[in-house]
Image 1 (cartoon, rainbow, N blue to C red):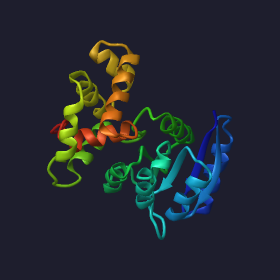
Image 2 (tube, one colour):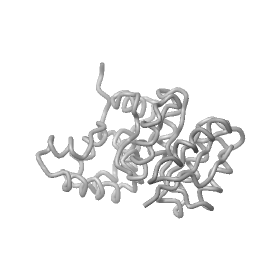
Image 3 (cartoon, rainbow, N blue to C red):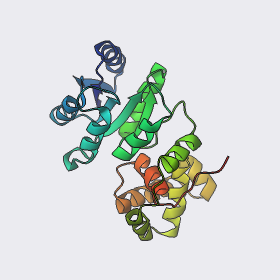
Length: 225
């Protein structure tokens, strides 16, 4: 199955470079280009994109607002947004994940990292962070503001089984299914089942959203340095 990719960036030269790279792969194709967030949302619907590479800073409707519009549209539930940012560790990262992005990627990443990110996002398997540590992302998610744990999300955690909570904690730590399976001494397939059930119960689009929920609900707290 070919991964349909939409490029959203106000720099035409950068879009052209991304197009050449993506179209060179046999399992993916660029189905559209957008220079602002509003156009990105429109083309995501029209071109039936699977993954949107979204620049965070664009004129008019920025990437953050566009990401939120896409993630809140039931008809686009299958779409995964990967935020492109010049600075991988900043407030934009936190806000983009909370807006519904599946992860983020630095514009200075290697071509292989970009292609891998698209495939990972399309599969919904992991939070994207090739250059930043998982622990740092977790701290930003938890400390991005001074809000108390979201009571609604805390209440929804009650629907999880003990094992699903254990798996959620491991997912929030940035661990893969194989790593979680080894830690909990179960099979990767069992872990995948627990992850999928947790996503369904918590209304999460993908693993990135599970990480957000785990921290915002207070289930997981950042480790002190």
